[in-house]
Image (cartoon, rainbow, N blue to C red; front, side, top):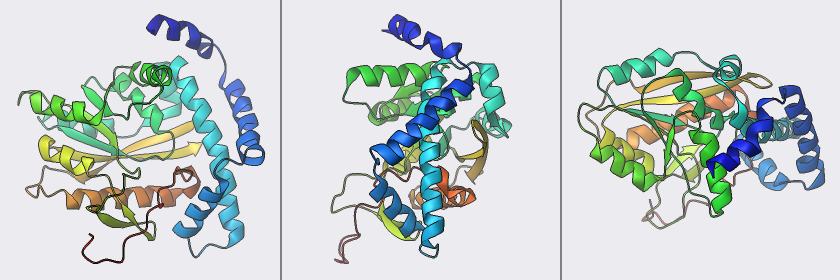
Amino acid sequence: MKKLFNFFFFPLKILPFTVFYFIADCLFFLIYYGIKYRRDIVNKNISRAFPDENPVNIKSIEKKFYHHLADYIIESVAMAGMTKSAFSKRFRYINLDLFDAAIKQGNNVLLVAAHYGNWEWLGSLTLFSKNTIYAVYKEQTNRFIDSAMLYSREKFGVRCLPYPQVYKEILSLTPEKSVGVLILADQRPTMDKKGQWIEFMNQQITYFRGLENLHKVMHGVVLYTQIVKTKRGSYAVEFIPLNPQPLEDNSGEWLTKRYFNAIEKNIRIDPAFYLWSHNRWKFIKPADPSVK
């Protein structure tokens, strides 16, 4: 399978980004004006997140989001043919020494990120850090798509594992071995009566408890991986400590609050670059006070 993907993705190594972005511009017209991909959901999400914005500004954010979504899709495909040199120019890690130092001091590091900017390009982290990094990912139903995504994400050395497998891997580590674990936990979980709620972008949301559970077994430093889009095809990544030192409080609730606060600050830098097409606010908090 790897040889097949090497052959399939080889043209990506020689195509200039001007070609990629021409394709992205065409894709924008298709998804925005043609099939109108989830435009009702996007408009609803942005409007609720920014209730004080007028309809003109909401429409401007919406349209800019679709331009970025097209870029993100094409950039994620292009990633399979990118080199360390290309990432050095387009995906700059501002304070990578913070992550490396935490590992060197014997701490496990939980890297928490959001669906903002181009999160797929975080797979380049191992090109610039020699530390072991796992990434939590959700297996795809289609085996070919799943294999293609893993090929692209693991190409540079990040090891992608489903959540239960990462959990077991952390438990099997010796005290002398410190690792980094990258996880995006801002997606909507399956609704159940035990769902936990928190305010995010002016609305109540349920949240994924896996982040808290993972931290409980890691007992490490938590860094929010903030991505800022500086211009088309260029991003700056900054690691922001959510707990500079491992904390005694192991309940996990402090982590969830700080995580979503960090995401909200990230979004407000430029709202258009968040994944508004995800139906994040689908569920409404029950009126029954017995349901948390």
